[in-house]
Each structure stands twice: as C-alpha cells, then as structure tokens.
Amino acid sequence: MGGIGKTTIAKAVYNDVSAQFDRCSFVENVREMLEQKDGVITLQKHIVSNILMVNIAESIVNNSEGIRAIRDVSRFKFLVVLDDVDETFEFEKILGNMENFVSGSRFIFTSRNVKVLSMLADDIKLYRVQEMSHQHSLQLFCNYAFKKDIPPSNYETLSNDIVSVAAGLPLTLKVVGSLLFQEEEEIWRDKLKQLKEIPEQKVVDRLKISYDTLNEEAKRIFLDIACFFVGEDKEIASYMWSDLGFFPTTNINILNQRSMIGIVVAGSRKKLIFQMHDQLRDMGREIVRQENIRHPWKTSRIWSKEKALNVLLNKKVISQPPLELF
Picture 1 (cartoon, rainbow, N blue to C red):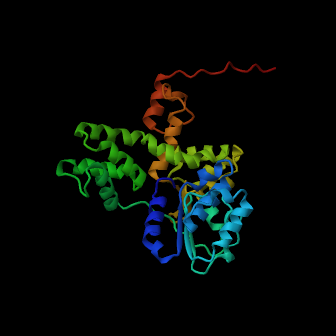
Picture 2 (cartoon, rainbow, N blue to C red):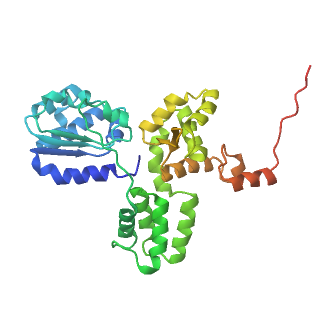
Picture 3 (cartoon, rainbow, N blue to C red):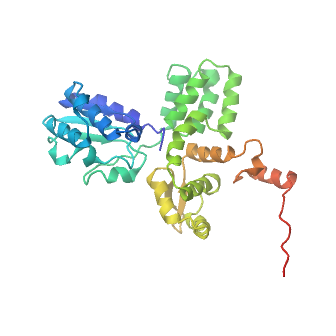
C-alpha cells in the first residue's frame, strides 16, 4: 500500500549493497515517468546515463536504441532499482532480454500491485512490506515530533495515542510528527481528536493514487468495505455486489492484488473475512465524507450509528409520489 515504506526500504538496500556492483542506478517514480510523453525513452536514458556515468541522452531517440544502449553496457554487473512500477512497465520493452545481463546483476522493483511484480520474471522473489511495530512507530514519530527517539514524559501518553491511530504507517507518522513539532499540548489533543475522525490530507492524497486507478465497480466495492465490511464475512457482502452487477470475485481480487484489502480465514467455519489497514479504511471514509461535507446526510454511505440515527430522527426524507396503478 502507499506510504508503507517501500521506497525507503529500497533506498536502504541500495545504499547497503551498491558497493558490490560495478554500476548502479536508482530510479524513483517510474510510474509517473512512464505517464509522460516518450516516457520509455526518458527512463532508458536515465538508466544508461547512470550506468555509464555520462550523459548520453541525445543518442537515444527511440526505445529500440535504448534497449541496444542498455545491452551494450550489460557487460557490467549492475544494480538497478525501479521504484513504483505499475501495469505500464514492460521489462523487455524497456530493458530488453534479462538473459543479456551479466550473472550477479540485480533488479529491485517496488509496486503497489503484486500481480505486476509476479509477471516481471519467473524467478522473481516477492517481499510484502508490513506495518511498523508500535515501538518502531513511536521512535519514528518522535524523530519528527521531538527530534529524538523517545517522547518527553508529559507527551508520552499523547504520543502513544497518536502512534496507535497511525497503525504502523510510516507516512502518517512522518506527516503528523512534522506538523506537531514544537506545537502546544492543546494542538496535540486537537490533532489526535481530528485523526480519529479524518486522516491527514497528505496521507489521503498518497493513498488515493491506488484508488484512482480502479474501475467504478471496484471503487464502490472498496468504499463499501471501508465503511461497512472490515472484519465481516466476504461471502455475505459478495451476494449484494453480485445483485448489483459489480462482479465481486474479479474486483475483490483486484483490490487484494493492489494491497488495498486483505482476506483472512477466521473461525471454526473457516469464513473468509475482509481486512483493511486503518489508514486505508479512513481514506475510503474520507472520500465518502467529501461527497457532501456541508450536508453529510446526502453522502452515499453513513457508517456511524450515531450519525445514521441523527439523520433518521432529524432529516426529512423526500419521497416520490406514489405510483398510480392502472
């Protein structure tokens, strides 16, 4: 998922092992690069220039020349990290045949979509980044909020509460920690209250990248899960989506591949239960909330029992006139 620390881990690995290779290249935001005009050529130029350590941008004018240039330098044992690849990335179209590279060369890819990674090569090894532990989360948060590893005694409880809300997502810990640096305790309490209801906008924007690439049926299923079905039976919800024509089997698989949901077996009856990271759940609910901030009763979903009861008690429902039967 977005913000879980894929790029940070890839950079740490790159810095740790790059001395073992003849040439190295780290390319961030591959997805954004490929979305640009002549994105494939731009990516090839970047890689070849890094490997040769000279700028040869003018000599590559199409992807075939880019592949040939990469093949010409494949005598080196090199390390290439390609950060944030998606369906638009095609290994052979950009880098050529993997068999051309010297034994010992390594490619590291990061992605939000496990299917994209599994299709890159037969012998690829997959690593799913997990959420940070509470202890490490607190340390990361404190580095941004206090510029040290542990909180002052008078901020210890507040810090632990905020870390719990972040649910092990490094992006949230960094963003919120930076915002609260040198702020008064009153601001901290207000921010904690806000985070329990509304996630930080910078976090929403990063997480929403995956949501924006979904088809409409998958988006609606994702929002339904975020609002109503976290911890609930997959089969029961799927009956509803099937009746709506949303093809739940296909779209649930898409959400799972993109690390937007998880599915676990639970209970003696081996039911399949939906799981979702708290920050993704809150992002989904924020999307719904923003449908109509001034009139929340007009949003597509209401998940809070209190808000639902308030709507039923205090808002009049405008109904259609009865149909006349002939």
